Length: 295
Picture 1 (cartoon, rainbow, N blue to C red):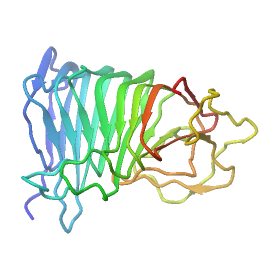
Picture 2 (picture 1 turned 135 degrees about the horizontal axis):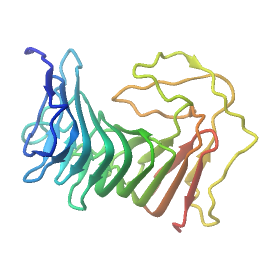
Picture 3 (picture 1 turned 120 degrees about the vertical axis):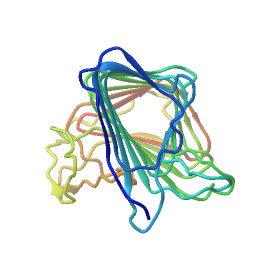
């Protein structure tokens, strides 16, 4: 159904600040905007949503913004359903934000990842003050539907700061974060049956289009780290990968789930956890460690 075109916007020599507001329900084809010397403000007057339609082709919408700085000022939706009621089912959407200096959001700018959403963040630092909601639902009755969403921060040089991260919406949401060297989560809300998997990428990172073949992980398990908290919730665990070869599969609609392939160090700090029933957290990597002062 319909022609599938790619739109490229070349503004690589532009300087100053540019604003994109109210681009709602963009459903593809691919969009590539390059303004690497400028500041991009997403959503100054109204929010933006980038999504896809489920059809026989199962196409993925890919949207890429490259700027010096990116600030998110209003809601940002990824792979939402379009239409009234339950709407039309989405396929998968990959949104990539690249900023040579920094990526930020203000406290009123909520980022929502629906089933099939991937958010790639590549920058020197990331500080998201607004709620980041992975596995959000859009309509009543979807509570039994599982949800898969991913945030890839492995290409962030400095710290990744989530002021507020929500996983699940009364549904069995599985969320994956491919971690940078240091990840900080202020408040984590886990709905019942939701799972958060924080994965350290292999040395050298993941390929853009990885082969689904066995990859040898150089991890040695003589250095198992444990969560540094005596009051640790029984569902919070640190998992190191087996030393044998294992498959690593990455798709925009599928969260990477254990056994974890990882060879970089990563430190994850969660300041506060609100959980309901059987939510789980897993941190995987070579010398991955999870610290929390949450009761």
